[in-house]
Length: 376
Picture 1 (cartoon, rainbow, N blue to C red):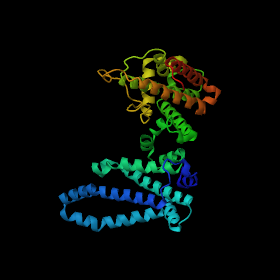
Picture 2: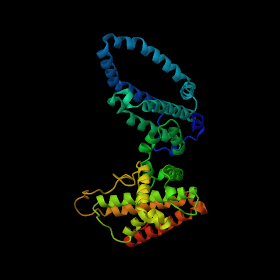
Picture 3: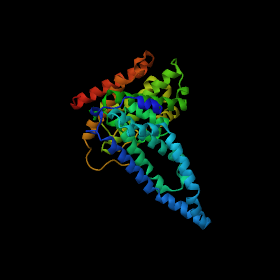
């Protein structure tokens, strides 16, 4: 999504924002200015590195560097900056003092311009800058700007805009955990849940295609159907493994039936529908691919998709934390129902295996809840 499309995208109303009442435009711009002042202040270590390296080679080189090349570079940068349509849009709207919606578009333009600058610095990389202290502030600053952006536009538009400037991974690491909070944040809404389900499926399908996992299966299904099925199965493998690990660190070396059977089904259910995955090498590669692809999504507090029990790893001391069982059922119920309701793939009769897997998994989950006397 380009800048023009982002500016034409629906802007969130006050009722949709988590912060209320709305912070004034001038205040938000002041916050941005404050952050960039902070960035400038933090660049002092970078200047020190430049000074040390130049002075060590030739003492007069440092004076020459700041009196000649730097002014030329700054002039060139400012000229380029002023030609950027996001800068033009932001400054014109602010200068004309237009409506609140126009002010929102101004703020969006400023945020995207700031994030684009950060993306350029990130692409340059810490090795070329040679100043770890300067680079260490980038993730925090990037995260705060992304937090502001998703207050102004729907998550889908924010994601595609961030992806376009090259901060896709940073977005998932910082904003992605919000997907796991949808079950407790009622104000996030159906649209955002649909976005996360769709994004998860797409990411997993791309990873499965990249590693050609489907090539290990000989079935009558097309490659497209296989990829989609394996993406859905893979998500629930990651959920099952995270669930297993979360229970372990909360004092459960084992769990009783029917919960144990439900977790086994999440982790190994794919083999019931695609028996060739029972090959150890094929299954290990499959699990590794899907879990690494979802390492930005923490299903449980302190647990990522790549968390697993290792030899010598001990669980927490003391009696098992029984509250963990309730949380596990809550989390699994949320994700199973979200996929059943919002996965467009399951509407296709070709993906009947994935649909049956989820339907059966939902039945097993309800059985666990009934057994434990938990109402949902």
